[in-house]
Amino acid sequence: MGNASTPGSAGPVVVGTDGSEPARRAVLFALREAQLRGVGVRAVCAYGSGHTGQADLGTPAWPRTIGELPTHLHDIVAREVTDSVEELRQQVGEPFVEVEVHCDRGRPAHVLLEASQDASLLVVGTRGAGLWGRLALGSTSTEIVHHAHVPVVVVPPGPKATTTR
Image (spheres, one colour):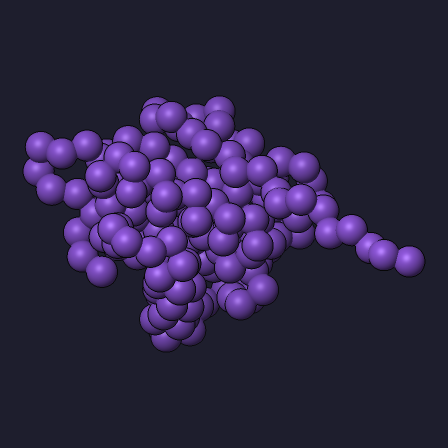
């Protein structure tokens, strides 16, 4: 996976991913939108913000951390994100979109807003895998909608699973 954009071209589609189902839906949307626009995707994951309060978002694959991060956490997160995005990129199919993966320590909204400075679009899911996951629109999505300097798409959740009796 290479550079998401070339000089003089439109900026990449930046997408937040944290391993949650809403994030996977956002990545699929971002990949399809990038195909239509002829640009790349920058998949961004924030981890280990270091906050000890409820705003510290953990994910299913990457635990919340308090204090010092293990030095290998970045590599683990980057590999997990890369594998997940590549799986979705293969699912979307050709023409394949170039993808770059960024994994940075920090608050998810701050990391995504920083990573989208040169973007043409910023894509997020409705909610992440953190403690506030039950909210219809998560705190990260809400903050991004209010502070982004590029167009934002908040990908809605999929249809509710129906149960048969």
